[in-house]
Length: 293
Image: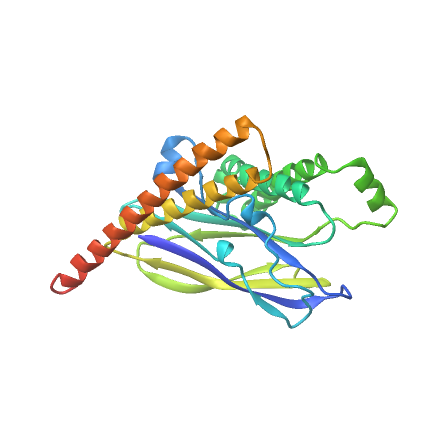
């Protein structure tokens, strides 16, 4: 079965900042099932916008109360596949909503990389408590995950800030980007096909009150394998293109070699994507031609 989480729209309920906000989102989807537990990893990171693309995509300029804006395409849809018969089928979505100000992009990027790298480990370390039937134990585990991720992100950002920037912040000449709030969502996936709405709250009841609305869908598809191959190829291409982008403007024989290798890998990934798309077309044709399908 394929499970899809779509983040459709950001809404601003309250915003006390005079000029409005410039929100951007970090999101990562983790999968927990029989295979991830048996592997010892416990949780697998399966959905996210690759670095540096996902580090700072501004959703709206000057967002005020009553404003809405679509979630950017790289962060809008994440999907997972569960094999039939698995006893454990959980998805965990961790999101952070930021308000952009003066933080240098290299610091934002370091924080985003730390967010992606730490989320899985923090969830794995608290997995038993996260699966508890006690709301209090679950909330304590969520708080522990949040605290661990926040610490790693803050340390990564701080490590990229110059003394000059910190002095400018101290005297009020610069304002760091601010976390509006984070949201943690846990989905227990049933085997039956279903569709439901979801809502993520950020800063509810404060002067910076936002929410993201979306959908949670479980489908059974005879062409699941081909769809998963396509998504994997698309993700690999996005990662490689992001790595190439980071090398733009850099010179030297080492950099040139890295670019050459990445371009070769990108070509191979594009070939794998084309093959998967062709196989999907064949699967769809075969399925539609099957009587009773």
